[in-house]
Each structure stands twice: as structure tokens, then as C-alpha cells.
Amino acid sequence: MPTRDLFPKAAMTGMLGTVLWCQLPSSLFQSPQQRAAIEASASYGGCDELRSQGKAPLRAGEPGYRSDMDGDGLACEPIR
Image (cartoon, rainbow, N blue to C red; front, side, top):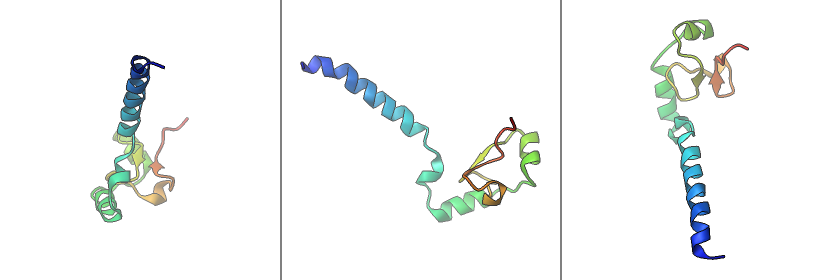
């Protein structure tokens, strides 16, 4: 296979990798201490308060996230 035929595939693979990398949650790049400090920097009474302020859902590592709100890394998901 000629090299010129590989370039479009390699370019698409690189772009896809970049898009996926940018979608990773920032909490993956935080130390446990950094994550705890950020999460403790805000406090919410619960999901109803978050939703009324338009701040739901919360992901682990975001200000105000508490594992007791949900426990799977995503708290206060939209109600369906």
C-alpha cells in the first residue's frame, strides 16, 4: 500500500484520538488531594438545589461533588 494512501487514515485516527482525549474528565488528571480540595470548595444541599441553579450534573472532581450524592462519579443526572 502506498504511503499516500495511509496518510488520510492516519490523520483521521489522530483527530479521533484528540477528540477522545479532550472528552476525558479532568478528575483523571488530579491527585486525590487536589480532587478532595476542589470538591470541598463548594457545598450544595442536594440534587434539587443543583438542578434549580442549573449546575447539575456534577462529575467527580468538580466543586460540590460528594460521593454520597450518587457514588458512580456522576451525581444528579437529569431525571428521565
